[in-house]
Image (cartoon, rainbow, N blue to C red; front, side):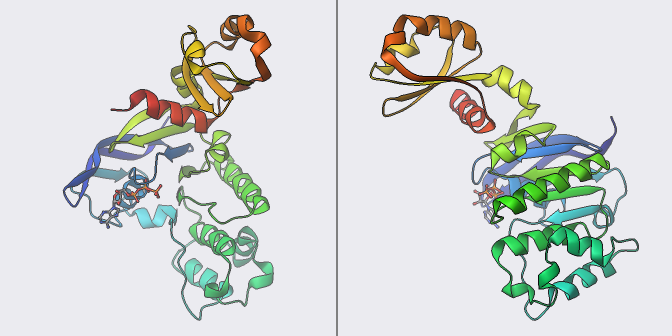
Length: 291
Ligand SMILES: Nc1ncnc2c1ncn2[C@@H]1O[C@H](COP(=O)(O)OP(=O)(O)OP(=O)(O)O)[C@@H](O)[C@H]1O
């Protein structure tokens, strides 16, 4: 597996507070990496530091496919850019003009899904339309690496589905993708690798299966009038989330937990077994590593 990007000992401090502390990463060519973490964890700061959009305090970022990152990367920033009095058609053409080789106008227009808004001013587009346009602009130079910072915010469900399908196609064409999102369920099927950023460092780096092995691979849910204390004492419980009389128990062994629960079966209603989703895993990871 060939690295396309290497980050070593990266540090960033804002107002005496360490935001990124000794970040070391190798990004494999053709992979989809999901960068996740709570609000303010430093995801945008990491992307902006990698791209040199903000200065970092120390450390090194190396794009192995070429030193000029602008030629090989496409970027979808977190905030929509809106330029007054420039139309969709003009901004797409302008973006294409920066590159020696670019996707065609029609290809980019199709990616944006704005065929009926070509003559509209960019500033007049809706939030979701601006996001789709930003995606198309990020692809203008047919980049090898794509950085996507919360790409689907504001998109409706059709646009989201369409977006992730396009990401899958780009992956199949060997593109390297680094994406942040708070819509964790969207990342579950697409990302090969998950990085959890917490307390200014990467506290987890691995696949979703590895995260499940560490943080619980199953969830047993039910309604019960019984006290939480009874369930905490069961051997296979990793964590319990209780809302009113609804219980959600994360476990690494659903079979043996179910056996233990049979003693209380008469007091349990709406019993369900599910696979842990990324939201639960992240919550659980934070609880178990809270300092
Ligand atoms: N220009 C700045 N000056 C001072 N502090 C900043 C600046 N930009 C970001 N920060 C701080 O750095 C921390 C990390 O912010 P960042 O935007 O990277 O987080 P994030 O993980 O992307 O969050 P979110 O999920 O909310 O987008 C936050 O505490 C934020 O307040």
